Length: 390
Image (cartoon, rainbow, N blue to C red; front, top):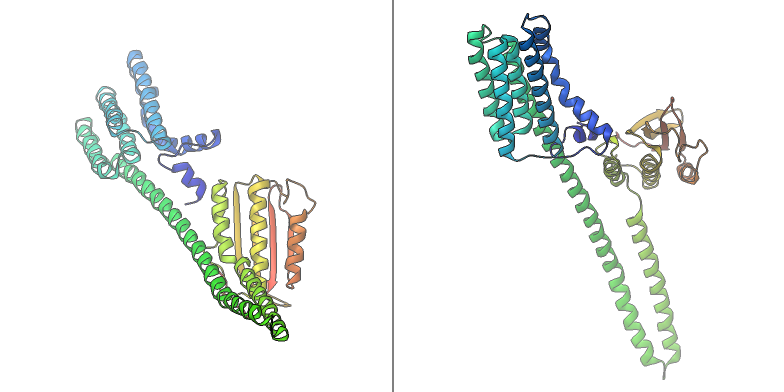
């Protein structure tokens, strides 16, 4: 399920704008297709004028309560007592309409079943769906419909489908939280690695500098030439320590493709953009090529989030065989404004810097609008005999 669908069907999550509210309402109202039988009965059933008027009034009231109940609950969870009262009212309307207007109105029980699956806690929803279906069957026996599979199957299937959707949404949300936790743990582990590296690199060097400084201080009055040698040693140790620290920091700050993929998922989800991002990155890329692709991915996702106004962004990583040898190809495509920087077709500093970075490792970068709306960025870097990609 995509992030937009999670927002659309998320229980207890209010819509952020009118568009999401409309999509949620359409998703809930899809079940109204089963209202064909009651409407046909009112139009062609031969009822009296009063019966027809009351039938229309009851149908409108039932549909209004059904939509308000499911939409309100999926936008903001309701108390169980209020849910039970509203569901009881829906069931009562279904019983009255079926007994007074005939068998075509038994379909209202399908909506009661769907409502139970959509709003009740799981431990109550399963049994309530079965009970509503059984009540529909018992009421349908004197009306000549009884075990009509055209009603029994939609009632059971619709109710349990709603419970399945809710369970899927809950599982997806928990998975996203688990991924965020894993990413945080990875960041903490990287910080610990840097702390360990700096401790190992500087502990010995600083201890040696301290020792030689004290020794030079003692030698200075009587043996200045030996003190000068100690000072020269201190300078050498200090320079080597500085080189070691720079190497450690460079390794720590080097962009990693796996971390950027996780960051891209988080950034796109936070911006409400539906994302398709590979779960893993190739683990045997050369360091320079991996860094170039990682910086490219970061810049492309940043543009999509800040400037494009996109609703969907797709990231792909694949190994390609070209005439010049194997390459690793990174593609980032969105359906936004069609340019990388605020809708302008002129490459900005970000794309210029990316092109220089990619070309610096022997690769190529292509970026251009696609179709009437959207933007595609493709980066290729040579990888020699790199294995399979994500």
